[in-house]
Length: 270
Image 1: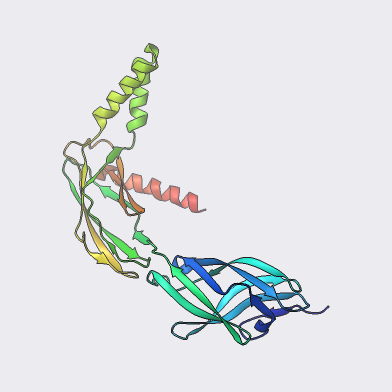
Image 2 (image 1 turned 90 degrees about the horizontal axis):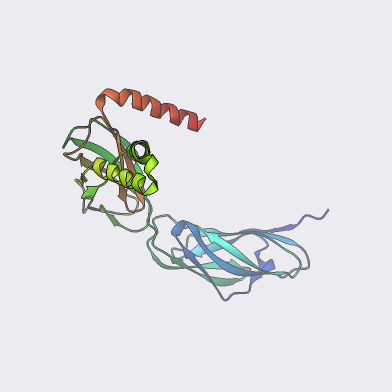
């Protein structure tokens, strides 16, 4: 059986042609994509794996294609190309070689917001009115634009059993009087148990973080003055499109809570 010819960066790339005068790719640096039209110039089936390219710095690379073309077939194909993740937004060009000819490839790099927070879950051990907790979070900018550490002034903290407890109480006390009175009692109970705002401050607020940079954030979380130390609370601190989930518990129950949490994570991973 005759082996299919393979078009690679070093051989047989003169067997194909592009139907486009210019190839345009766009997207985030690591996932540029665009439509190209390929033509098989031969009388036999070929597999097009890649073609040689040179960027503006004249650095050799390959343009991946990975497609099969029947004899003289013309095919449109969605192709992908990756650049360095921190490549700044803008328009870049490179040349793709087809036999003795060259085609221009235009790459339009978009802005990409990509931050990572570690850890994304923290535990605040101790519930007292006005108690101040200090935490450290790693902030990584994996995108291609500089980002500024945001100002976070107020945050909502919620009793873990807020809904369950007040709904149960409303049904017990007003369940026989109809849905309206039951919901009224439920709403009043929730309002009564809601705490004031949690104050959150970040020492590094306003600092610009360049692409590829990682810094340590110092968070200060101040609990409300009106808070029930017999309850467990939870909340989220949002930074751009990511969140830090926090749980506030009494020190006396911290060991039990952490053991249960770790056990759940262990079962989940299994």
